[in-house]
Image (cartoon, rainbow, N blue to C red; front, side, top):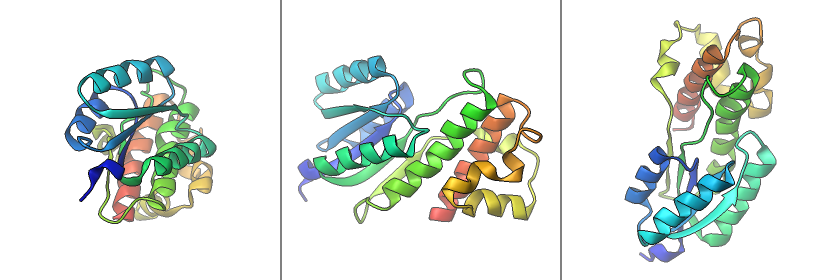
Length: 187
């Protein structure tokens, strides 16, 4: 098997993502995507010095068009064999609306767009948080809606409206719960 035409994509140029790709991207092309250009430059330098073949692309996880641009770039590098999503915002960094847009919607779009183009035998890793398990139990209907609602309708769900999501921590918890449910639904 020729691994030189295989691609691993990392969203989120932080230490968790770097640790993962150091293990799974050896001998493969590595595409780093992040919102922060400075972090991309720094991680590219570390990984290039360690012998990895690295490309970068600035990307916004909350934007379907940005994610599609990353998909196209990854496809231009070879067969997409791995996706690592270690991107997101924390409740201390952003408003509830931004947490939902990045951590919930963005992850759903990422799974959807990359799920359409990844090569047979590929795998994905979505870094989440135990925070999603800190929510009280949701109804079966709410869990089903979070798992199966078309991506472009997710943020319109009644359970994700400001009268339910009153702060960034709640938004984060719902986002992380949704990520687990959607990954399970894709499996």
